[in-house]
Length: 343
Image 1 (tube, rainbow, N blue to C red):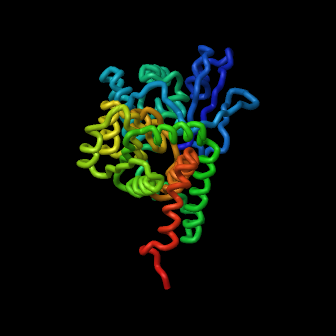
Image 2: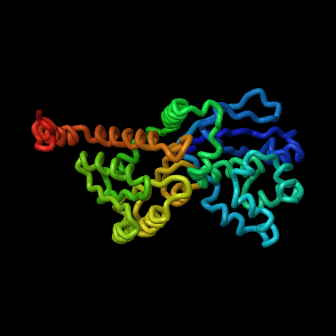
Image 3: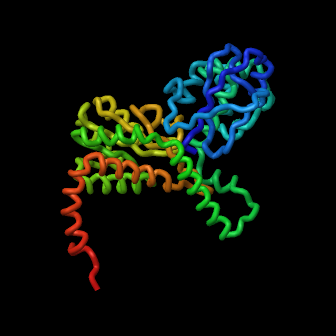
């Protein structure tokens, strides 16, 4: 999912290397570490003999490095790259395995796997597993979702209820993780921007058009780019006075990611909306909002739509007198405009 849980834990000085090898603890050096997991987990338990731990929920998670998994693998020797390659190709198959089970499947040993994990920039095997979890989300396909869906209670009515429950769960996660102070700061940037460019494509076109309509209603200088060609032309002339909003989920649509990178190279401030911190949108944006699109089958945009509604409402009230003046004109059209049916 997109909303994440960050658990900040101070490892016990008694943490043993064997516990690390089992993936049960962080590094034994004693510095605080972070783990990230899917918001869908109602609790996060560590087999360290700790009675409880404090969790901090946040909407934005910044990885220690902005490197892709492929770039991390590039830090390894050729032999170790080949050893770890199956995990890159099928992260879902390894995300729940202990380090001993991973070593057995790769025909290696736990100590070697741990050295590889640390060479890739992870402080512990647990952190690596959390990254794999996010990677499996980013690489998920509709076919995988269909195949992994439980056949139990699989009537059509039950399927429909599952979708509603997932949407409610995604909205609940958004409610508890969205940082309203950052949304207010974004509203300020929107009003200060010379131009606002919204990037997106494929299924996210629906979100781009929805956000475009909302901001246009407020009289803001909004432009959209939803095809590769228009994206290329739209970002070419951007400057530091401009703002880019890029929406893409899972692995990230190439036109959106590269368009955002080009805009950032020209100095524009780039804000991403995506579902996982391993997404290239999250890695390359100046700031990013994470919101879940998890669904039993394909993606659900219930939570992203809600996020856009929150942003629109904050923008409308940010300059309330200006908005009221605009809505007085809108009111007349909504009451007497030709586009409304009368009968």
